[in-house]
Length: 189
Image 1 (cartoon, rainbow, N blue to C red):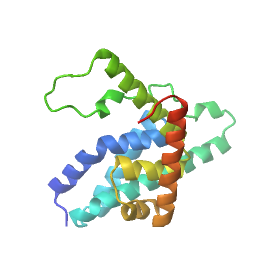
Image 2 (cartoon, rainbow, N blue to C red):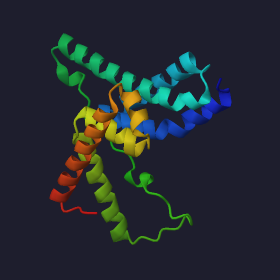
Image 3 (cartoon, rainbow, N blue to C red):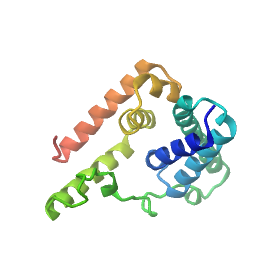
Image 4 (cartoon, rainbow, N blue to C red):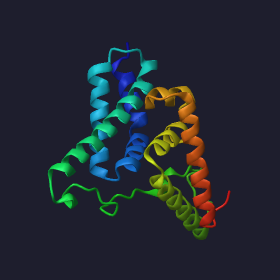
């Protein structure tokens, strides 16, 4: 059974990545925040009595299901109301976040990059984020779990509710699509 401290530590450690991952899917900061908070509440309420080692995977599964539920609710709302623009999320409504926060500091706290390098790096990260958002939903989900959340294939398959082969296929297609899109913009490794 997980202690309150273990649960709190887990939630603290996943909150930023979970928010960004959800934001990639729903493209609405407020909705992403709500989904992550609801997922955290569900984990604490329904699974707090599980062993601490099981909590990370359970959280990923809850987060995926909560995101799918959000899309289902959005689809229902759009079907019920004639004015769709009230219910569509807008990419430009503060939907961006600090791209540079994802850069790893060099350990000294001092910047060793020139302003030009820093600007170029920010542009590359922006292009990567844009291309990730353009991926089909299942490819994006598999890619983010594997490479953002650093989950292994089996954990990703369990969280997504699909086979390990499907995860590998989704990831492979996502990587190929991202590489092709970035090469077309002149960005190479």
